[in-house]
Image 1: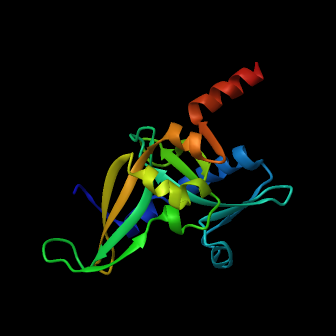
Image 2: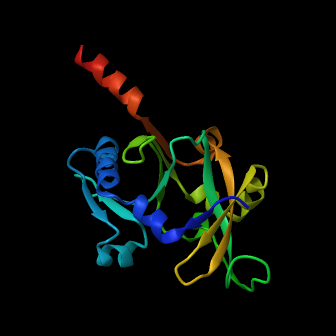
Image 3: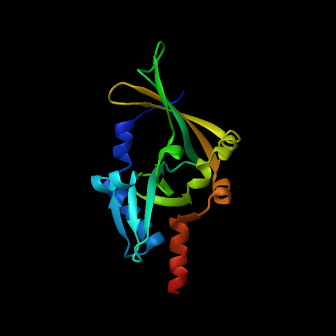
Amino acid sequence: MGTVRNFESDLIASNTPEIRESWENIFRIKFGNDCIVNWKDNIAIQKEMGTDTTVITKNGRRFSVELKTRKHNCNDNYLMEIVSHIYDRSGEGKKFLHSKPGWIYTTTAEYIFHATLNEKGDNIRKVILYSLIPFKTSEYKSEFSKYEFFGLSTIFQNGNFQWTINRLIPKEVIKRDANEFWEWEAVKWLILMKNWKQ
């Protein structure tokens, strides 16, 4: 079953001031230097949109986005969470409580930003952005079974145990099937900036 995740500590680790600043740099690259970022800790925004973040461009276009981070050593397969099964505890004799759809179905965000962190875990080194609608359709459900299974177990503060079923989708498949796809990588960006200045 692998390592059991702690939801609260994972949430804190993915939302440090350094990572938040790194996200804001990504937003400026994608949406323009004058974009306005509303973070999820603004409760009014969260209730209104049900998403991690909203970004508003200079022209007033509002983008609702959900942010995902992953460790530096991940490959070009991106995790999509399909369903989670919740139990009263981990281990033998655990009692099944209920299931819930994964974020691919529950998020109200238009887009997912999926970032790969650097080795230290304090900065984003590459990111993809893609539109979610094509992956939410009932027709796409059968597509998920074609891709590698990846299970994650999580322990919550109340002792509940969650077994989450994910699929690892190759970047090229996401790029092919998404209505909109965008990617950025730190090294490539630095090379482009250097060439532009010459």
